[in-house]
Amino acid sequence: MEALLTRLLPNVDWTEIGYASLDTLSMLGGSMLLTVLLGLPLGVLLFLTSPR
Image (tube, rainbow, N blue to C red; front, side):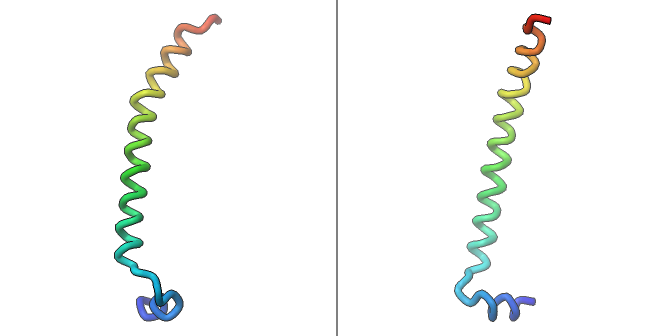
């Protein structure tokens, strides 16, 4: 499998792809954490204080 990838994509540094994927996942996790911590209480507060 590695030989096939090296032959098809000779200029790709797969270790950099791995590091970039981990960076992307960490940014996604951070933004999701902030969204849940800020958005969920705000949504509940807006729902509870809205006129029926």
